[in-house]
Length: 288
Ligand SMILES: [Zn+2]
Ligand SMILES: [Zn+2]
Ligand SMILES: [Zn+2]
Image (tube, rainbow, N blue to C red; front, side, top):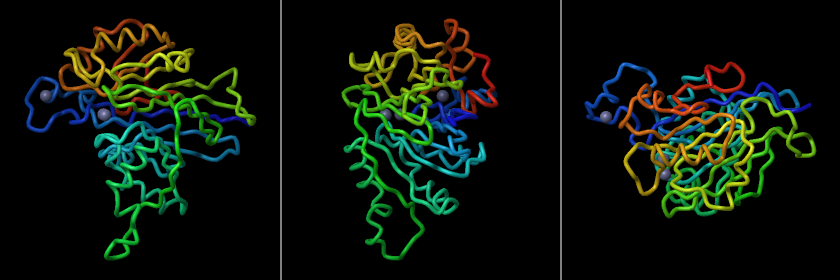
């Protein structure tokens, strides 16, 4: 058996402040279109694994994770992949303790060594639990070391970490393929795979172009029109998507500079801004 019932959920699609921005009265922040409410970036992939068991794996764990999880009725975590340790991508780590309680199992946090170090520093109450004054209900985690292009096999899926540049900070994107029992990618990939999640990127280094080729779905950072040192602009993101040439592209990490509708109107064929609650694969609500 191979993985089936693949469902990819965009839990959050906004930039670090979220949209609406606190105290802002701009047209996007005051829009009544639900697609203009963007929580911080994260995703879940839900599957039935080759043994017939339900699995849920998260990419990043933003401060909005609790709200995101409740919206989609998520009740387990079979692995967590971290792109980088910025606040908007990891400050929901506390929330996974509920999955520990529900599953009675520890959770693997897949990250590069510098990211793991940062998590240990930030979340001392989790990682140095013995120092807590009172024994408290904290997450039960274990570290899994990631290296670019060294794939991790989990529940019928292959996660390939791909190097991206977030300004001067090297971070990871993740390519996800369905694989057979020998770890070889299936010739017929279930929709929306192969998929790559590339958040917080200002440039794709040369060694990462090939691993991001042949995608069904590309998810890519697209902050706004004005230049930014650590994120792609509208034009930069479109250009990268055109070069990688996936079947379809969704953009994430969007600021309040544009409404969903404004962005959508400017998109080339096969591309669209994502929104919180977008689902690909099983039960998709996308027209792309
Ligand atoms: Zn970010
Ligand atoms: Zn605003
Ligand atoms: Zn970042």
